[in-house]
Amino acid sequence: MLEDLTRRLEAIFQKLRGYGKLSEANIAEALKEIRRALLEADVNFKVVKEFISAIEQQALGQEVYHSVTPGQMIVKIVHDELVKLLGGITPQLKTAGIPPTVVMLAGLQGSGKTSFAGKLAGFYRRKGKHPMLVAADIYRPAAIEQLKIVGQQVNVPVFSSDSTDAVQICTTAIQAARNQSCDLLIIDTAGRLHIDEEMMQEAEKIKQRIKPHEILFIADGMTGQDAVTVAKEFNERLEFDGIVLTKLDGDTRGGAALSIRAVTQKPIKFITVGEKNDALEPFYPERMASRILGMGDVVSLVEKAQQAVDQEQAEKLEKKLRREDFNLEDFFDQLQHVKKMGPLDQLLTMIPGISSQLRDVKIEDDQFKKVEAMINSMTVQERRNPRIINGSRRRRIASGSGTRVQDINQLLNQFQQMKKMIQQMKRMPLRGLGKSPLAR
Figure 1 (cartoon, rainbow, N blue to C red):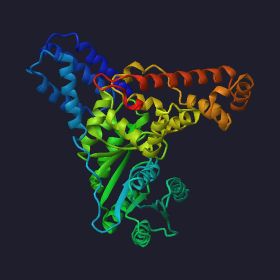
Figure 2 (tube, rainbow, N blue to C red; figure 1 turned 90 degrees about the vertical axis):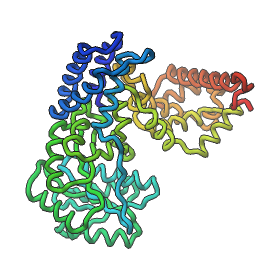
Figure 3 (cartoon, rainbow, N blue to C red; figure 1 turned 60 degrees about the horizontal axis):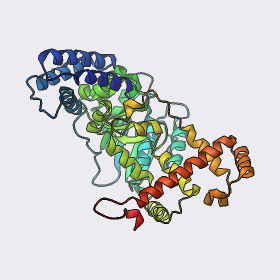
């Protein structure tokens, strides 16, 4: 995500670290390179001009403390200005005093509206809401069926109708939501391959009739400046409330993310970072600025971990570790928790300082599948007591999992090393506190 821009900015800041103090000359040189990096990332040129001007005003005459290098000072200034550029705060969706809250999705065909509708419904369902999806795209072949499939995947009802009037469908859906006690109605409107008058008029009629509490414009993050241009036109006609950037995991440049809010003056509220139904994140300007600058995003990483780990299971695992009863079944369960958090390469980039070190390292999520296959090919007895896995058992497990005996040996060796490390941590005394918590 935004890898090219992050790489360029990190290289610029690396040069600044060698300077003893900030001067007009080295500031000018850094700003010239930052300007070039942003333009090559397809950021709107007017946005770049204003952004560079703001950094220059902040940097010139800035006192550099003995404990802070010029490079660190510039990074802080750029970070603060990026946060402002991205909106500063993340506003929440408006909610209705009397349910349901109606959210209307608008955007071009192919921008990811239908997929996002499912992601948003699943996101709020996990928060205790009762969403309903509305199939208001009556033009695209199989659009209604696609939304029904998405609804089934996230276990959310979908309202559809044989009517050829999208406005009437949305009106009827509101009453259906009330009848089924649904407190959130998400309307998937029709899109086109390009902006046309018929599509815009229909969207305006839906807005006038049902008066949605929130209108979200869905923009394909990978289209760069095209997304910004389309957003501007939609905003002039619909005056939407917020922006959703989809496919941001595939956007290595960052032009849309850094331009669209400044051009439309509308906040980015959500981003999608994958194909899975849970690959949706609220947009936090400060966290995104940290990611762009290669500073990681520990808060988002912790939140993903909290969502993936069941508290009751975590307590059971802690008791097992205390009894030194950690086995391959527990190891398998922990793998599943890590998988729920998302692709491994994305998770590692959230750790400060890790992204630059692993940029050229190919991290294969398929390794998880390989380990899963080996553990699944073991009997319950073997998983609970790996010591009984002798030569013949290893050959059987390898054959059943489509791997080699050497792979089984490697897995078992790594597991034993992990157990030893856990035991060492358990016995390790904490200075001034006696034994570690695990040893109590």
